[in-house]
Image (tube, rainbow, N blue to C red; front, side, top):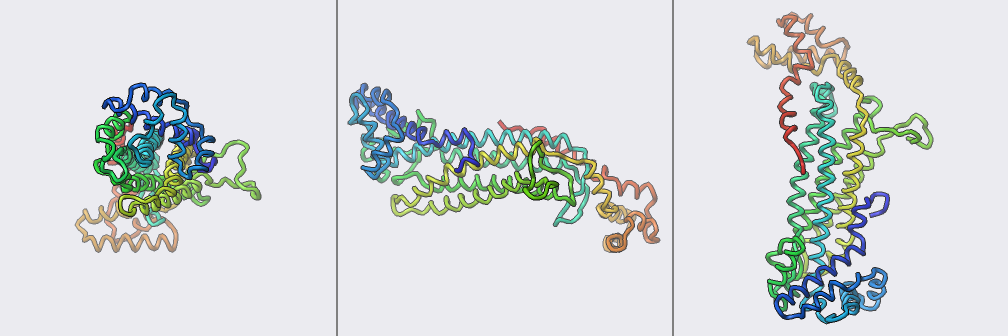
Length: 432
């Protein structure tokens, strides 16, 4: 991922130095496992552990000769092992190292993403409670609907983030697997105890049946969950973008001192962060598509997936980590104009209260169709000719509701009086 959309934590995790360190750990654990079986000498395992880390530049130079990245790594590690270097990579095929290392890296990357999701959830939850009683216009199809509160809007985000967290836990568990099973997964040259030893020490599950590689449906699922989280981010970002529109003006991204919204128009305060996040979600869906393409490999394996994964696994996890952190900052500093929300609610001229009137008329014994027709007639006239819905209803001889009932119909509090249940549920929503 380009530096602009990277985070230090993910950059370090996916660095070549860290990748080679994980490869070395796997190779050392395998030799240690052979020593446990009294096949390799114990000093050989100790020597591999003590060997210097493979230098990325030297590794690349060696790969120019071998034209094989794992073979180049093995050559260098074996040569730098003081004694017993011949036991490095004993009984292994490249995928034993590569796929097991990928399990480690994806597990650790997933851990960073889960932490970021938990931070985002806590931020959204805090702001949901902050605005739980601030009414605003609800909109469906982009059209005025009924009153809601900004806190309720944020509560729906918090619960979606909780679901994203649960899905990611499952996806991380799915990719946190290793396989030390040999050239076609038959354990012909490495007994299953080697695999179990290595995976147990790495904190991975064992792939119950591999070919030469770990099945790529696992990685496709992982990338699909990342894309789904990206879609959640896009939903939240799109809402903020709409609320920041000049005609709405109910919420906006913070604008720091010295910031410029436009190189040409000094008055501009554009929703650049949420627009950026919308674009990031598109990339994440593309990575998921690439992951799905990787599932169908030839026979026991080919390497058509390899070039894809070298890009999409580090890029998708890094981009999502960046996006989660950026969205957390946006929501933490989001400027919310509750006065504008109330003004926009009043600007509906009472139209958003139409269902309350409908139900009150039905309660008087009127048929639903007749009540609907009366309210709709007055509502459409309000739309087209002006005035307020309440004034028109008060002048309509077919409306038999008293003043107190009408007053209650046109109260935002009536629409929010049962919403406390959502916040009771939200109070219990905590991500570790």
